[in-house]
Amino acid sequence: MTSYLSDLESFASLRTEKGETWSSINPEFATRMALQNRFHTGLDIAKYTAQVMRKDMAEYDADVTRYTQSLGCWHGFVGQQKLISIKRHHGTTDKRYLYLSGWMVAALRSEFGPLPDQSMHEKTSVPALIEELYTFLKQADARELNHLFHDLDTARSSGDSSAEEAILAKIDNFETHVVPIIADIDAGFGNEEATYLLAKKMIEAGACAIQIENQVSDAKQCGHQDGKVTVPHEDFTSKINAVRYAFLELGIPEGIIVARTDSLGAGLTQKLPVSTTPGDLASQYLDFVDCEELGSVDDAEENDVLLKRDGKLVRPVRLPNGLYRFKEGTGEDRVVLDCITSLRSGADLLWIETEKPHVQQIKGMVDRVKEAVSDAKLVYNNSPSFNWTLNFRQQVFDSWTEEGKDLSEYNRDELMAAAYDETPLAIEADARIQSFQADGSAHAGIFHHLITLPTYHTAALSTDNLAAGYFGKEGMLAYVAGVQRQEIRQGIACVKHQDMAGSNIGDDHKEYFSGDQALKAAGEDNTMNQFG
Image 1 (cartoon, rainbow, N blue to C red):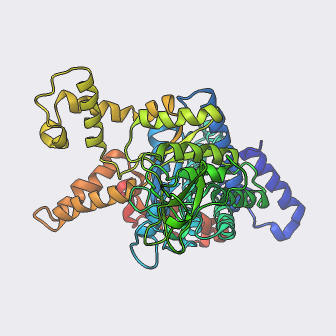
Image 2 (tube, rainbow, N blue to C red):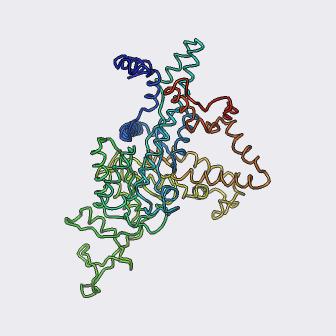
């Protein structure tokens, strides 16, 4: 393992080797620039972060309290600030990732403007966002290391050898802001070849984990909306294979595939698979299709599609749009079959899209999957599409009803009301929300918890609060009291926005390149000094 001093020695030797023509190259400056750019390509990042995820998955298998978390983001700056905040508050980025949401790409990054989550946005915007996120995370590394280099210079100039040694240790043990990104490829944006091509671009941009869902690509819907149409297992398996081949081609066999099933809320399929052997996967899929029994072929209409099921002639229920309907109440069974099939076909993690955050519901399905694949693990969407307050208050209401408690003071249909906020039921519901991630990981096999759209909502909320005051009676005080003063008092690095944008790094580079002739921005007249 290299260190600051060993790298410095190597660059010094290289300068000596190159002779007089390299006399203006300072080995210390070269060392610092090299350390500030640890990852040279997206593939470097994907290889590194894949190993991080594999380690975390193994640690979760050994101890279910060691689950991982992430927040969704739609801009490089947003992702950067999350990791800076994580390091500041928690001291480490361990077990913390980022999530790239297809919903947010569609809503916030498409050239068409805001779009619904239906795979209508440009697919190239997905790898572009991955690259952008890692550009900002690498810049966060450079900025923090730059501060350490200045601290090192200060310690040296003051002759404080113990401080110098401590700072060198911080540099040598620096923890990068570069963390795994679980990236949403939707349903693959086309056939298996299209999936492979896009997966390659995402991996080349730095993605070590790709999440793909079993919906029909050209009829994709948000997981929390109606009208979802799933594909037969062999169609989905071909796309899992496509993603794996993309990882293998690019030299990352450790790449992670997250197979998502939308079957719990999907009541339709676009096509009927061909069964070649009784009891095969296609026949299991066909068993879920809703059918009408016919007395004979004469009962069929012209151009009907017919099946033979258990020795009887049946007609699949086909809608006017040509889609076929699944039988009512088969959602959980289809989820379990999807999960087992995906894991046996090379997926590493599962994603079960549910209609509510309910640990026991998730556990019921995962336990069935684990009967076939014992180490099955989930990525779970702690979605803002759920009304968490109402859901958990109703869960407490129902559990307390079963326990025989007196609930006469509560109206189950109105539990969202603020009037209930300080009641025992609401307090218990909040406690269950607080422990949801730990409970889900301990009991329902959830390895990774994520919130898909957190900054979409936080940006809207904070902007609304600022606009209400700034354009109202508070005027400039709305910004000063509500934003800047809070940044200063809470130690938010962005209060020094010039430094965050790289001005000080640029000053140092100018000095490296031009020496005393460098025109630097961080002089006495820089107003950022007011925040010193």
